[in-house]
Image 1 (cartoon, rainbow, N blue to C red):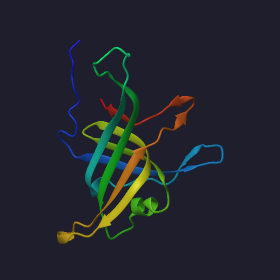
Image 2 (cartoon, rainbow, N blue to C red):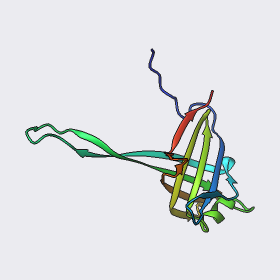
Image 3 (cartoon, one colour):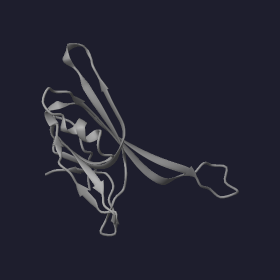
Length: 154
């Protein structure tokens, strides 16, 4: 079997970006709100994977032995402000949990995140933007954990 890698963001730009607010019901069920589609306004997008490790080794071992104990991820979007309604910005001021779906170069990233930071800036030459930063949360879907996924489309 030949090994291969996915060539992220090679070729076409972002083709789809949706930010869907989520509310949590009394029994913990997630309900989707109205998605904001911002593909044509995204100035930057990045996902960071974070692996927490712990040195786990025998008493007589002097060699470090890092072992994964948890996984986390962060997602950041910088979006251009526009004159018309900014649904994603309005949602950021109203909700705290979101489902973010990004398609770029045939690669789909689906991310469940808690909004951890919202900032807005005015720049010269009309590059006024707002930035949304999310940290992953793990919803439970019919008994199985669902975390961030990155899938290459055929």
